Image (cartoon, rainbow, N blue to C red; front, top):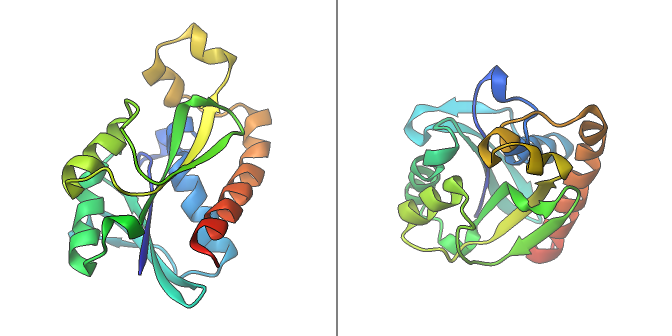
Amino acid sequence: MILIVGLGNIGREYEKTRHNFGFLAVEQLAQVHNFSAWKEEKKFFGSICTGQIGGEKVILLKPNTYMNISGKATGAVAHFYKISPENIWIWHDDVDLPFTTLRIKQNGGTGGHNGIKSIVEALGTNEFPRLKFGVRNEMIEKMPTEAFVLGKFSSDEMTTVPKIIKEGITKFFQQISC
């Protein structure tokens, strides 16, 4: 079983923001691969949907705990289904990577990302894979980081986001050998 956690913030004001790249990515994966409908699960502190990839059950999670305490939802699902950290993928934005850049890491530090910090605390390890979506552009120099990541994508960026996600999903499939 694989758990893919798309990081983001709930609420209309956060839709289409850079910090919600993870939400956008798991939503696209669910749609393209005909996963079940999203269902809010209070015991998991988020919304989940399920499907199959390469004969393996996959659970997608969008925490409703807000970014900084994403570990609460991630830990709840992981512990309930007894999913080991190497099968827990975290999909998230990365302000240190240029927009359109994708990076897969099998483990590592938090890079200052509060959602990742929370997940490390909840799982008791940093040994879990991540799919990072770069969001950095020239606007980062003109505002605090928090304002930048909570800012909406430009219309030009938003037209590119689905293509970037599609490339990320392809890289993910290559990693899990499906």
